[in-house]
Image 1: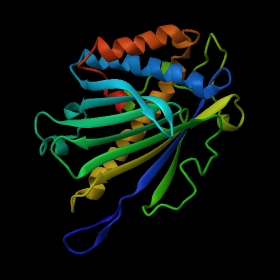
Image 2: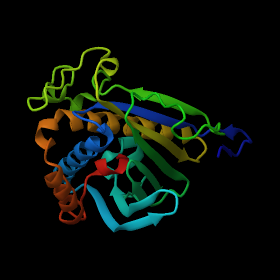
Image 3: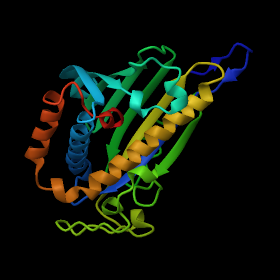
Image 4: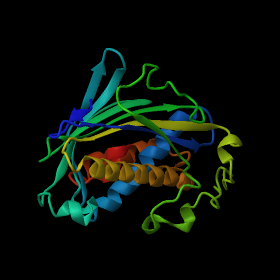
Length: 271
């Protein structure tokens, strides 16, 4: 919902629907993507935990939903101090975290969260995965939304990533998998590659504080987009590390959740 600031003006809260097209080896790509996703998250988790950053798992248990069926519910505390820009660190407490509650019914997931000291700040992410090129314009329903919604296509090969994250070995314009022979990705690859799938993420960022709303919401959306872009690039660039290792990757994911507790990667937050 939009809100009215102290001057009586209506402040618009907008939603961004991110669409990330990925290519994999066989159909259904959606379920092969899940293995690459778990591997990417686990690898980042171990790297981040060594730096004393990440996520504390508060609750992790099976959950049954009458509409979506069997799933997994998790509650986490995500520590973000080192992820904030200097202007934000100047006004937040030294111990700053976001509480995330997530319901995973893969290939459909929901995450909702709240800030430890800003009750008017929240992020809601609804995710669906389908075997297509990002062409489903009604994946989150056909009814018009009250809030403005922007659709953002993210090209994992050609969109620019922050320079500090760039690695030539992960540049999908030049990367070619030795085990699958997939890659390198040329201009227009989305229309020439098959099989292919898309990760749809409907992201709502709310910061209902007059004077800061636009700046904070834009910053958070930029962070989310950068994380999604980097993570999906790496999921494919690391394909030779995880392809054909379904059981091993799932075991790594379990180890990440329980052994590296309480310092699990902030990457989990957006995936």
